[in-house]
Image 1 (cartoon, rainbow, N blue to C red):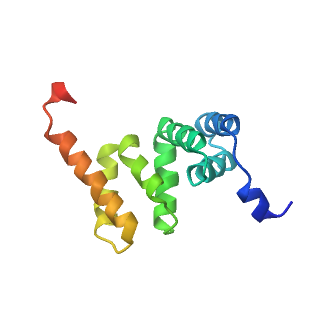
Image 2 (tube, rainbow, N blue to C red):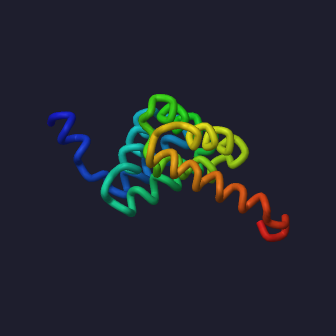
Image 3 (cartoon, rainbow, N blue to C red):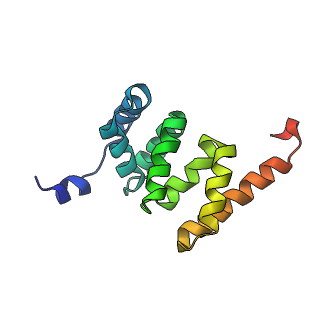
Length: 127
């Protein structure tokens, strides 16, 4: 099977859940790649499960997404996960992306910073 046909295969929700567990427990790079592929795939359920798995993995996923940002390979969907993983750490990264020149990614980063600002303006009991 060619790598193109492998990349275009549908990633099943079961495979995404298994990859999520492997990524969280063992830090498997192969599992991480499966999650990243699912995030950019056409199946909404797989995208949702991949996003939840990346968020649950915390710092490990933040670092993975940062690698993609630094390589200019991050999607808007990945950037939107950063505040859910670590809001404080994400703010600096998002401000940097928002000041950049990456079109759609720039706008997504601005939206995320706006959201973090609105959350910060809430009273502690409303958060």
